[in-house]
Length: 500
Image: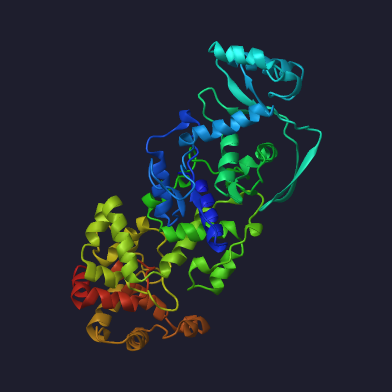
């Protein structure tokens, strides 16, 4: 499933919920050549995975729920044929016997005449064929299709008010499009008009590649005697390339496939929050003002959707994901990360087997006013927490930053753990002792003291704490050092110091 399909379904579901409407899943499978094995199951499971469950429609390859079934177009063949017969009887449609070779010849002649291509006006070979002749051809077993007898005039304009794009003027349709193919199944154009009417659809949310078809679709509703629904055409998701923009493509862009997010371990909630960011630009401010509210409380507005393609930015998505994960409890992080690791990262799953200890690790800087924001996806987690489980000194590049003298580093570590470290200290006491250590070794107790008089000190308390941090974790950037010391515990700390 393409992320654009998930995006459309996400918007349709949100709109239905906000308006006390019905979101339904109809499978439009009249093009049998494009059918994919278990394709319906794939669509249903992909949507369900993101909490997008239809109120009615298909629930597996053959079953459905709701009062307007079947919700699979290939099972509604007789319905479409009944409406096609009605149009034939009214002289609004006709059988066409043109072969592929005939149509190619028409196209060739149009190109030579430098006219637009298609089956319309003077180029309609079968439009005015006598009924008797058409009947004889059918009786003799000649292959045929059914075409709409369009009353449109391309010199006239239709005025269409789109729920997203606003007012749009387009030429009337004059193409005699196919409504029933030679296999007896309808085209999408014909089937969707009948189904939307019979199923009581009043809003169709779809990609804007269908916008040029609006004149045809409105004409179909008119000729069938139906009231047309409203349309909302969503601009495609775009990506920057070579200074320009192009559509997000599954062939070129891994992130275009919905499966990519599961493989990378990007939480479903992160994907949904980012999609809402794209859908309504005011969501980002709403989220900042309402950090703890459910996204369902946001008032989504179709009119606030962009009319041109929204830029799909993975860097922005990962930033959104960091915010989402930062609000998770340690239990939720553990549950989702472990489930992902069991399927995608055996080494991480092994680390997380010790649940009690892992919950302590994942609880560092979590649940406070400024939670850690260093995890964007579960595939990053192993590298983020690995040092809390094992410190391989052969594979670790210890970068102590400002203090590089090995003897000085050894003295800082020795003095801290022999004189100042006490695992029972609260955070304030621990920090005060870190300042005392700094002062004893000729470093400023406060960073501002050092900045005011850099010549008077060897460095500052931040340099001292960095030495302790790097010695125990192999990293100069980590979450809160005090919490790390508490989780590692005296036994593990002693082991790490002794291995220096």
